[in-house]
Length: 96
Image 1: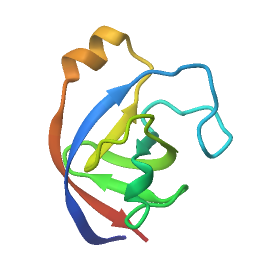
Image 2: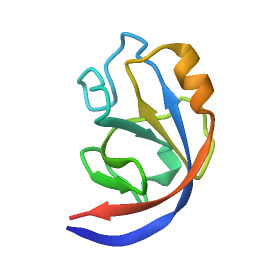
Image 3: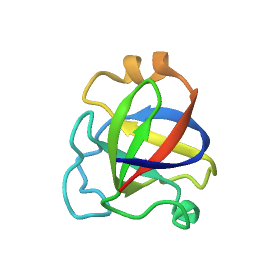
């Protein structure tokens, strides 16, 4: 159930580094996403989000760079894909 709109945020892609996420697990392509630690007033690890035009993603990690108002989506595709994706702006909703 989609509950409420958090905000319109920047959405980017990232690739696996081979390290586990903040939740202790390896990221899952097209499921895992990372948020800024300072956004934890909106998001917590394990929480599901609905990103408009993209679908459901689970907060599994924190971004390494402190850039506010951004979510990184984990992809298993190439670095080229992630760079081509660039930055998109989408509405993000909390799922309960």
